[in-house]
Image (cartoon, rainbow, N blue to C red; front, side, top):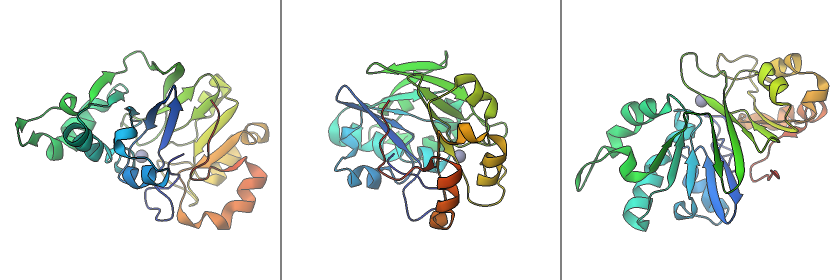
Length: 237
Ligand SMILES: [Zn+2]
C-alpha cells in the first residue's frame, strides 16, 4: 500500500496501491500524492510500468498528469494505462485534457502519454497476476470499480458496503474502504461495516482510505476487524 489516506488526510498519502510481479510494477490508482509515496519507497515515476484507475477522483487519478508528462518527456516511454468501462471519457475529456491536451509539439491525446487499454471484458492480466474487475458502490451514476486479484484478495476501491460482492467472490483477504465519520453518502462508515458484514468476514477485512484520527479508533477496529491497513504494508497475492 503506497498510501491509505482519505481524500482529506494529511498524515498518510492517497489510498493507492502497487503490485510488483516479474520485476515490473503496476499502480492501482495514482492520486496527487503519488510522487511522494513512491519516493518513500526509494522509487520514482520511471519505475512504474502500468496503472489501473478505479475511478476519476483527484486522490485516485491526478497523479497521471505527472506520470504521463515525466515518462514521456524525461524518460521516453508510455506506461500502460488500464481503464475500466466508462472511465475513459471522465478521465480524459473532463479531467486531464485541460492540462495535457496541448503540449509544445501541438495537440495531444491520452494515448500520446499512455498505452491505453480499455477493459471491456472486466478482467486483465499483469505479469501472470489475474485481475477481475467489479463495479462497486461509490458516487451514484459515476463509473467506479474494485478488483479481485488472483482469486485471493479483494481491493474494494472507494465504496459503500458491498456485501453481495464479498459473498460472491469469497476473498481470503479483503481491503475495504472505511470512513471514521458516522455516515458518508459515498463511503462505508466503520459502524455500517460492523452492521453489514458478519464477524467471520470482518476477521479477513482490513480497513483503508481513512482519516487522520485513526488512532482513536484503533482498538475498536483491531477487535472487530483484521485492523487498519498501514501505509507501506505488503500483502502476498
Ligand atoms: Zn472516490
